[in-house]
Structures are given as C-alpha cells and as structure tokens.
Length: 103
Image 1: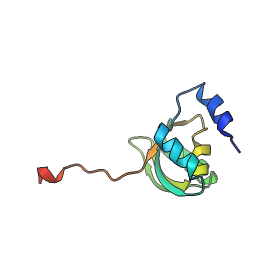
Image 2: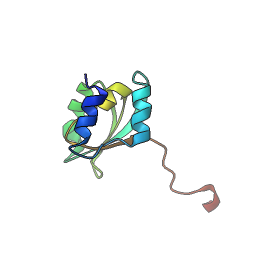
Image 3: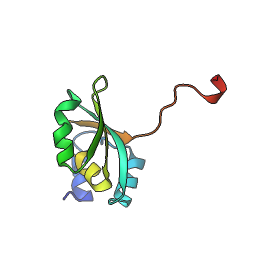
C-alpha cells in the first residue's frame, strides 16, 4: 500500500494527476466510494482491465478524449493515480451545455 510519503516522493517526478482538493477528499475518506474521470495516455480501452484490477468499476470508456468514467473507493483511486499512464483524475460531475438563462 502506498503511504502519503511515497505519494509525495512520486509527485516530485511528474505532475500530480489529482487536484489538491480531490486528493484531500480521497485521503480523508479512503473507504468512501467516488465517481471520477480518469484521462490516460493512448487509447482508454486498453486500460479497462487494469483499472478493474485496481478494484474500480468502469462505467464508460471515452474514445475521443482517452478517458474512463470509473467508480471506487478513495484508496483505489489514489493507488490508480500512481500509474504512469494516468494523466489526470477529476471528479465526475454533471455537465450542462446551456444555462437556464439560455432557455
């Protein structure tokens, strides 16, 4: 299992794929399930099985943006962030194309 210190050492080599607020939330609630979007290098489909082997459930594979919508514990997501092919991990949130004012 990765420790906060080993994560700190890893961050010195490449940018942290997690935003600081998301990292804090996952670290403070490691057993709580969260939904996130994982952006990867190359084609996302090739990482589906690896992501599932980390204990995460893949909801969707995004081919145009090379990403996966996944759900799992904070601990599993933090461990996934250590993979060199993970570019970024962000909270999976609803996306709205128009505001209510535009309607």
